[in-house]
Image 1 (tube, rainbow, N blue to C red):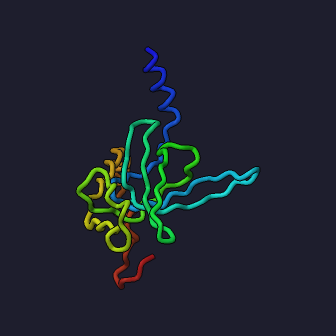
Image 2 (image 1 turned 120 degrees about the vertical axis):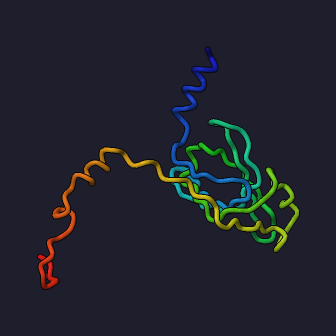
Image 3 (image 1 turned 60 degrees about the vertical axis):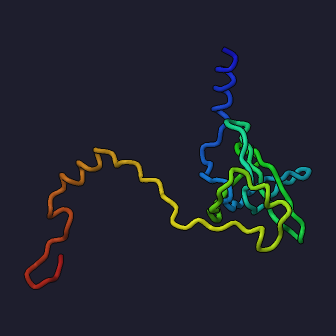
Length: 152
């Protein structure tokens, strides 16, 4: 009983516009930072090295190298502090966690890019729109052509 109530409350707080990303992808995350009374957006870009949890408590870890030092940051996927998540590039990896990137730098810290990723099919078109297009007559859909080739 209590778990059902908790699940309903969590469903209300889940973000709907979360892009699909996997381990090894490079993300650009825009986070809202509040300093005193001012609010600004800070952008962090890095490679996803881990993804844990489910539901409202799902987290992902970002790894990047800045000024010669490796840096990691953990984000809650459904946090209200995250304003935007953008997938910059898809990674081609064979591991569930990329913790081996922690001690690397330079070319060794790169992840191969995935080429030719499958794209999800578009949802089927509603039947009402198909009927309305088929009911249109030929004269309504194309302009009338006169014998000399000029259209009216």
